[in-house]
Image 1 (tube, helix red, strand yellow):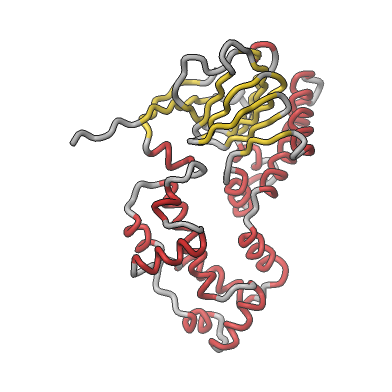
Image 2 (cartoon, helix red, strand yellow):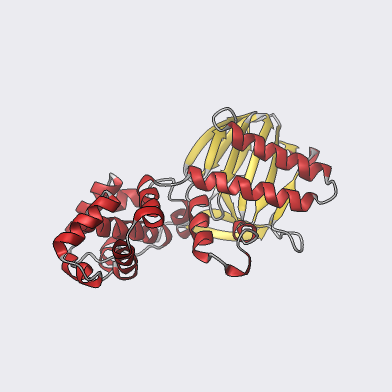
Length: 315
């Protein structure tokens, strides 16, 4: 049987101005009929922030279609397939800002200081695309429009002002994308986790793919297993075994999104010796089996792996 032909997805590469980490597409050039005659998605090497002032049409993100109109904005991470299509016979007015998130956040932590903080923020910011009504998130919408105005006016030091405003915007996005369990883990580690639990968390993070026994974790912390279980559960609001499974499933999700490896191989690499145990834990934590989760539209990076990609430089 012949292999199924891959869908076409276009890679539109944006080259940032020298010494800069953002690129603005503003003005009358972007009042146009979008997407006519184009039946494929595209993705970028950087984050796309868009604001629709007027018009109607469809914004496709991955396999989901959204009806857009004036007064809405989109925030689309790098590598996320999408496209905009105006209603036939109409024009839409959008303006865009493309941002190199890693480079931008480097302004906060120069010389690689707090590198882990930067990496954690980038993961949060790129966790999912957003398409929202301005009234739903008015602070974010106002910040986007303010940034556009600053760039449009191009007053003295506007580049520095834009970078400061963009960093604030990225922080707002990161806070919106926080996962409840991840937040608990972070707060516990930062505020009240004892040295015992901190060591255990680091050990689990480094060796989750290996067989882990609670007895061994307790020994690493130089306390009894009973004391360790009580300390861990008090600080983390989750038992040590449940936490180990959570870390394993989170890493399995990353592999399911970004690779086409078989589920059984991913289960083994993430520390599950028995596939049925992996499947049971995955469904309990994520709400559906791994194969079904892998096909969900929001797992946008997986779509790129399944597509026939060609590239060209952006507008």
